[in-house]
Image 1 (cartoon, rainbow, N blue to C red):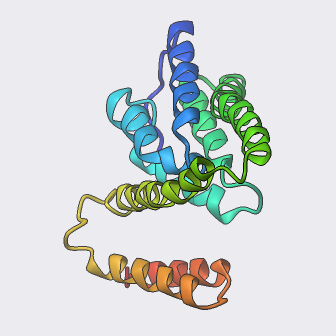
Image 2 (cartoon, rainbow, N blue to C red):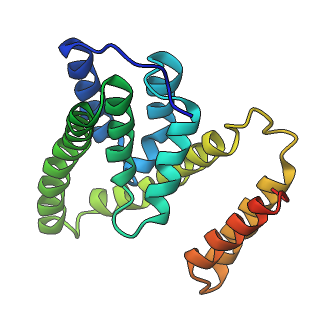
Length: 193
C-alpha cells in the first residue's frame, strides 16, 4: 500500500532534516527508541508515510543483518518514493540518515571520551545506572506503538502474549532472536497472532 504522490518543497526537506537532528539527540538506546515520535511526525502529522509503510520499514530493517538504524534509511526512502521516485528516495535516505547520525555520533564520541577519562567519578557511575530505566521505558513505548498499529491493541491479546513470552525467552535463555522472529512470522502467517 503506497501513500498518494507527495508534493514536497525544500522547506519540507529542511524540516525533515531538522526533525531528525533533534531526534538524534533523544535517541538514548538507539534510533529505534525514537520511533514513536517518528511515527507521530511522519504518519500522523505530516502524512508523508502510511502506517503500513512505517511498520514495514522497521520490520524489514530489524530482520536484515546490520545495524538497526537502517530503518531510518527505509523511512527516508519511502518518503522520497512517495514524493517522486528514485532521485527523491536517495535524497530522503540521505536526509534522514544524516540527521539521525551526525549529532548523536558527535555527542557519543565526545561523551565517551569524557566518560572514559572520568569513569571513576560517582556522578558518571550514577548516570550510567540511571539511564537504564529510561532506555527500557523508551523501548516499551516503541513496542506499544508498533503492536497497536492495527487499532485493536486491547483485543490483540495473543500478540501481547507472544511479545511477553519472546521477551522472557530472550532474557532467560540463549535462544537466538532470529528463531523468535521466525516463530512469530509463522504464527502470523497461520493467522494465530
